[in-house]
Length: 407
Image 1 (cartoon, helix red, strand yellow):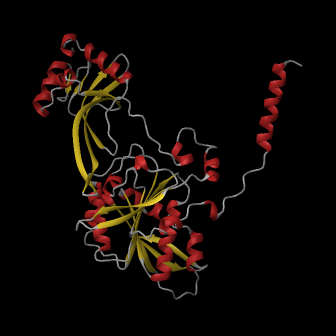
Image 2 (spheres, rainbow, N blue to C red):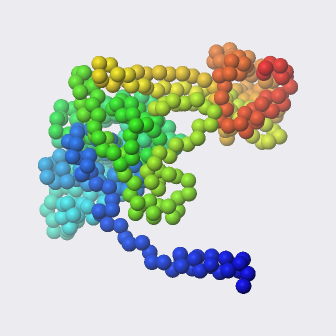
Image 3 (cartoon, rainbow, N blue to C red):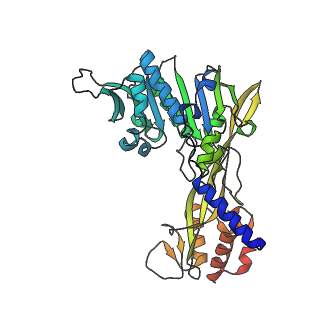
């Protein structure tokens, strides 16, 4: 028997053994994340992040339900966008088994008009439904300023680290603090939880609460001190949740590229040649587009505005200092700009140009941005070398501009 045949038979046996192996044992409550460690710090603010599906949200919502049962304290569940707190999602937030475990076998929770209501499902019950909590969004905080949240002592900000490609809210941390002010008012005996997956290190919450994530090791639980508005120190609990190997093993069966989903490591995307800083919050606005009729590609030039904060040691206290910058970025895009678009196809739209030089002059007059000068000064960056080539060849295709103007 040849070596090649032996290898093939060996691979078949191995594949058959993999197919016939016993399924993994079901996960138990002990296999999921618990708040024991961070609650042991006894801090009012608690920031928790780690791998997906390890039970972080389950743990903090269960804690909120237990506080209502034991002390009558209500809770507020917060997300970034209004669409995140729609009825279909909020009805699934609180686990039915947990509700029955905490409040009784016939009890259930229904989300209605922004509130979680506890009620009895038995037919002969005279139990009047009561509100145990609310759900609100940060981008809608101006509509909740006059709303009251009686006896609320638990606040949960879920998914505080934005998903890849998710827009952040303008002045998001200010919106978060307005939410705290609205909900807590003069409350003292409160607990605040910020929960998220380890998708990005870039978060205004890390900076504001004095956390240098580059120095945090996975599995660590500790506290930091920052100054509040009265220049008094407050303590913040921090936990980068240790990898749950059982969950990681199951997740690895269907995950290919995300380290965060499997192990809870940072899932940082490659930003290629675009300058960036740790903790940077960036927004891009489309300035103009070029259409390459040979490759059928639209290349856009975007104005990128970046804001980031560094922590400076002032008399032993970490104090945030803001920085900002603005430059141009070239990216491939799906849609032509509504304001300045260059194409070889003639049409009657006033926003479409067939003369490159004329469009660039119009952009300079209309926005004050001189793209040619920015190119010469080296202040234009591409998402990758292929997009740079698309832009270069498309630019030269409109022979109204000479190559020397790019040098």
